[in-house]
Each structure stands twice: as structure tokens, then as C-alpha cells.
Image (tube, rainbow, N blue to C red):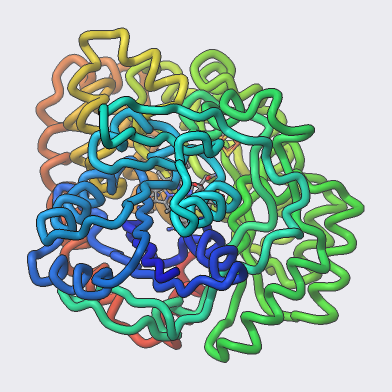
Length: 514
Ligand code: B12
Ligand code: SF4
């Protein structure tokens, strides 16, 4: 069967759609993938010329699959409506994280929605279509009965226990297309920018209240022995070697497992040994304070790990009471001290979340104080809270009429438009602004663009009180910030995207170095 898969992710690194493609190819189908990578300003839509090109690739396909994030759902709807208007009458199936979380919304636009992991469901779907059989009882699929409009909501099937049974994600770039400068062209190796994002497992045991894993853990309750499943080390190494052989410009692996450090010490030992011996290439990964240990970090660094991102997210009170992320500040500092021991060879980035309407001024101050205690140097990534459908916080906020606008608008904003997030939420603006200004390289002397002495001055209780009650100065700085956000998103990022891979690789190396 001829199948076209369309990804609306803003970066062409989508592992989900690539794995769907590879299982379909393994079953003998012909699959093309279109990466509709586009602006992170989600208020922007595709141009007609681009949609025409999508249509010409889709013409003749017997099944079209689409995936999206919550933020790119409206763009997905735009593609669906366009294809329908052009007369495409073959089945359209919508999968991915947004379809998993909000199937009721997606089924309004297509007749089939895939909830949860899609590899087995999509194979069953294709078989049913080929054999002219009903698709109404396929687990994981929601299907609209075209004769009476009834929506059949099948439950999810059991999760795949052994991820090694899945073929490697599809990197046959000759079958792939990408949107660039209003033109859909063949995918080229340079589109990876010298790096490949991939996961070595699936699932996260924590289920923090702002995260989609919160819903996934509920969705799969009783449907798996363990929610966290890992590929074997040999599978990962073979996969990376395969990619390295194919793509000579690949200079590092970006392991994007929610928490790679959750793997046992034994697994990390095996991974590091084999990675160093067989791959020997720089890599990045993510860690969490609970599972960072001296032994694990030393092994990772010696195997070539040069960058680690560790989630802190909130101060202890926010983490415990709002995020249900049971992490103590002292654990964060302990883990940070371990990471800091490798500062000459390891760049560390900490993720925090702010712009949270449930936080009180003292919680933000405590967050800032915690960041001051963390050993330097490090890179601080400040993220403004987005209420993603399906998360516990989204459900909580939904019951509050005062938060109605924030819920509706926050996931449509460009994630990086700091000022827009702050102006939308309007909670504790002065302190949230300070935290946002601290983003960037942190050294003994500065937090991002802010000198350390200025930070101490700005968080003095009197000054905080004054600026929280009179936001004039805050507004002025926010407008200046809007301008710098605009320059970054409209000028700096597009220029960066045009740069050769060599430049991107070099920039990646210097960017997080302090
Ligand atoms: C790796 C990752 C990234 C990477 C790579 C993203 C990419 N384009 O591939 C990077 C770092 C770039 C990234 C960026 C962002 N991310 Co991210 N990311 C993830 C992460 C950790 C893993 C995604 C993944 O590969 N999963 C593994 C694959 C196998 O699973 P999957 O994609 O869900 O696919 C399966 C099913 O969904 C289904 N399926 C998928 N597609 C299709 C299509 C069809 C036709 C069918 C039938 C089935 C199907 O089958 C697949 C295989 O079983 C998830 C968290 C998570 N655990 O999922 C967050 C997550 C997807 N990211 C999220 C967000 C918000 C972002 C950002 C907006 C954040 C930011 N800083 O800007 C950006 C936006 C990126 C964008 N718009 O393109 C949210 C999305 C929330 C939502 N409801 O939309 C998640 C869920 C994390 C969270 N906060 O809860 N991300
Ligand atoms: S630890 Fe990270 S991935 Fe896991 S539930 Fe919390 S935020 Fe999500």
C-alpha cells in the first residue's frame, strides 16, 4: 500500500512517525514522510503553495497519517481541510501526542484517530483497509462510522514490552521531504544539523502534573508490566552505528529519554563501555535529581557525554504541592554538586518552570535562592508554564474561570516568547520577569544577562513588594524584552537555520559553555 505520513513538528526529528514508517515498510508498504517543520510561532499557518505541494505528494496514497503536538494541532487541521477540499477521499488517520490526549477534538476532522503507541494499530488498520474489513474494533483506534456518524472508541492495547522488537526508526531520507522557505523539497542530511535526537526507551514513572506523562501513565494503567521500557544497549549501539555509517556529518547523539539517568547503574556501565568502544562520539542526555549518582555521571562523562540537562522545575514547595514532583531542594543541590565535579568536561543545563499562576511570590524567591546555591557554572533554561491538555494542571486550571484565557492561549504561544507568556498570565510579573532574565549562562558573577549584584538588589523584600504592587517598571522591561524576543525569533533563528552544519555543530559546542 502507498502511505504518506505527515509530521507537523517544528523540528524534523520526530521519532514516533519514523517508527510508524519503519514498521509499515517492514510489512512491505511504500511510505513517504513529509516533515512540515515550520515556525515556532504557532499563530502562523502554512501557505497555500506549501499545501498544494503536500497534496501533490499525497495524491495516489491509499492512507495518509498525520501527527501533531497540541501546539501544531491547528496546522494539522489546516492540512486535513486542504486535502479534503482537494478531493482526497482515502482514509486520514491522526496520531501522536495530541491525538492521544485529545482524541475527541481530533475525531471532528478525520475518521480515524490513533490513541497511544501506534505501531501495532497502524499495521492492523492497513490490513483491514487492504482486506476491505471493518476498522471498528482495532484497539487504540477511534473510528467514525461513516454511515451513522457514531464514534467507536476502542481501548488501548497492552504496551509493547520489548522495544527491541521494533525496527530502527526510518532514516531512509530518500523517501522523506521537508518544508523549507515555502517549498517542500527532498530531505537532505544537512537537515539534521549534525545531530540526531532519539530515545532509548519509553515512559516515565513520575507523572508530574504539568507533563503529558501524567495522562499516559493513567491511560496505560493495567496495560503494561512496567511503564518504563528500555531498549537493550546492543540495540541502541547498533542503531547509532547504522546512523553514523549513513550520515557522515553526524557529530553527536542527543539522547532525549525523559530521564536517561533512570537506567540502572549496570545498564549505564554496559552502555558506556560499548558506546566508547564502538561509537566513540560526543553525546548529550537528560537526567533527574533522584537518579543522578557519582558513579553514573563519572561513567557517562568518560564515555563522551558532554552535555546534561537536569530538570529542577520548581522550588521544593512548588514541586511537592503544585507539580506533585516529589523532589527536595537538598536532592537538587546534591545532584548539582556531583555534576559540577565534571565542569571541565560537562556542560550542565538546568530546566525550571515559571509563570505559574499557582505560585506565590515567596515560591519564586525560593526558586531564585535555590538557583543561587547551585554550584556554577551552568546554563539556565527558564520555561514559562504551558497548560497542556491532558496534564493534571490543565484539568485543575479548567475548573477556574479566571484561568480560562490562559489555558486557551498558552499552548498556542511560541514557547520562547517570554514576554508574551508573562503578559498573558500577569501573575507575579516582576519576579517572573527576573527569573526569565536570569536565563542563559550562569557564572559566579552573573545569571544570564543579569549581574549577580543586581539580582541581589532586585530581590530585596522592599523592592519586590514595591514592584509587585506597581508594575510600571516591569511593563517597560517587558516591552524591551518583547523586542529582543522578536529579533531572536524573526531574525536570529531563521539565519541560524540557514547556516551550514559545521557552523551549527561549532555553535552547539560553544553555546552552553560558560
Ligand atoms: C524528544 C522530544 C522532543 C524533541 C524532539 C521533538 C520532535 N519533533 O521529535 C525536542 C527537544 C525537539 C522537543 C521539542 C519540543 N517539545 Co517535546 N518531547 C519529546 C519527548 C521527550 C519524546 C517524544 C518522542 O519521541 N516520543 C517517542 C515516540 C515513539 O512517541 P510518540 O512521538 O508519542 O509516537 C508514538 C505515538 O504517539 C504514535 N504516533 C505518533 N505519530 C503518529 C502518526 C500516526 C499517523 C499514527 C497512526 C500514530 C502516531 O505512535 C508512535 C509510536 O508508538 C516528549 C515526551 C514523551 N514522552 O513523549 C516531549 C513532548 C512531545 N514535547 C512537548 C513539547 C511541549 C515540546 C516543545 C513545544 C517544547 C519547546 N521547548 O518548545 C517543543 C516543540 C517541538 C515541536 N513543536 O516540534 C510535549 C508536547 C505536549 C503536547 N500535548 O503537545 C511533550 C509530550 C512533553 C510534555 N511536556 O509533556 N521535544
Ligand atoms: S520527570 Fe520529566 S518526563 Fe517524567 S513526568 Fe516529570 S516532567 Fe514528565
